[in-house]
Image (cartoon, rainbow, N blue to C red):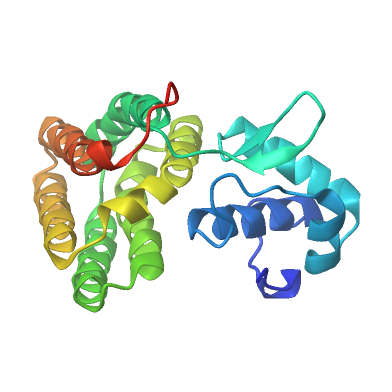
Amino acid sequence: MIEPLKHIAPIGRDSVEDRVAQALRELIGTGLLPEGTPLRQRELAARLGVSQTPIRLALTKLQRIGLVEIGETRRATVTRLTREDLEEIYAARLGLEGLAARVGAAAVTSADLADMRGLLADLRRLARERAVDEYLSARWEFHAACYRAARRPRLLAEVERLYWRSSRYNRLVLSSRERFRGSVAHYQRFYDACALHDGFAAERVIHESTQWAVHVIWDSLPSEAA
């Protein structure tokens, strides 16, 4: 069931379009709107308590980040999870997120590291509880504490876009306690690299953790050619 819009926190500009996009992104990312789900503007508008105009604009925004497909008839659906989509997203993350890690780790302050330590403790706790949604949110904040230190807002925005586009795949990765432990181990290594201001080590951790994530779910995904 789609939550009322008033309970969804806004993102970016405090506009109805942004809030609708945030709400739909969360519903898709958490699997409440699974792949292939038709996204009917009238139905979404009624459930979110808005007009169809911000729904249409939000769907276009989500199309740009790869979560929504809009066909020739203008019918919108949630995009499928496929090997090709995974490969393309994570190839882009390898480059851009690796760069953000390298320049961010070299620039982190003691305050940034303190934030990261606190978030790392949260991630360990959430991993033990297997609280996937909270874990994924804390995971982004953990990395973003490093990436923001580079003061490169365009790079940060692109990395964040790719991160949330990959959120459905991230959920598949976190399907067992063992995988949670593997995930946390990567974040400990990332923190250690940042604490040393070793940008190249931080970049290597991002590359290795991204390749690990692709490896563990690759065989469970269909090909677009199937």
